[in-house]
Image (tube, rainbow, N blue to C red; front, side):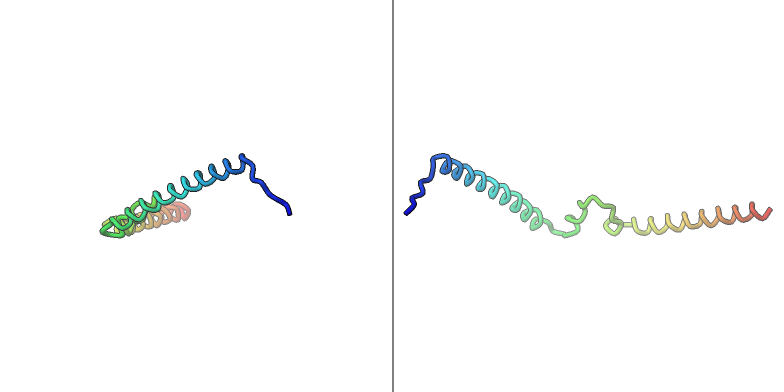
Amino acid sequence: MVMKVEHEIHSRRKGRNMGVGLLLMGLIGIVFGLTVVKVLGLTDIRQLEKFDHVARPQLEPGALEAAEQRAADVADEREAAAAATQEGASE
């Protein structure tokens, strides 16, 4: 029969590992709790969507119409440039 005696270093390491594990679980719990509070505290889900660091015209009033107008203006400018190029080439 083999008796296994745990050395003092192992018991100290086990205690430190448990402490670090509890600390990490506490940190994860704090982050999760803050996330839940933030999401539940919103009255409108669109408030959360505003912070994704991406330009989203559908979130800004009037931005979609402005983008469509700008696209039409650019298309008109290209047509005018193409027409001027063709007139210059035909001369």
